[in-house]
Length: 79
Image (cartoon, rainbow, N blue to C red; front, side):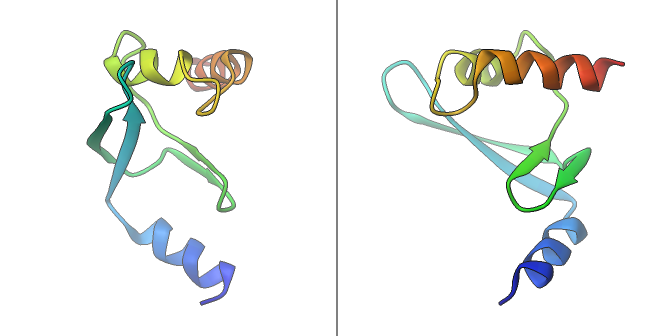
């Protein structure tokens, strides 16, 4: 399947499953509404409460997201 077909398939979905890893290394999976914005196959923008468990897990895991990038995304979504 080529990239355009994969991206088309993703854009048609109404639900996304977001995974994170807790401090002990265990996975957490959460169903969320579709991304607010999609940039290709590597960047997906979701909205959630900034005090959520998931945001804390991403902010504390440098493999998931850099704090600088996460803050930039947060400000972009709020504006």
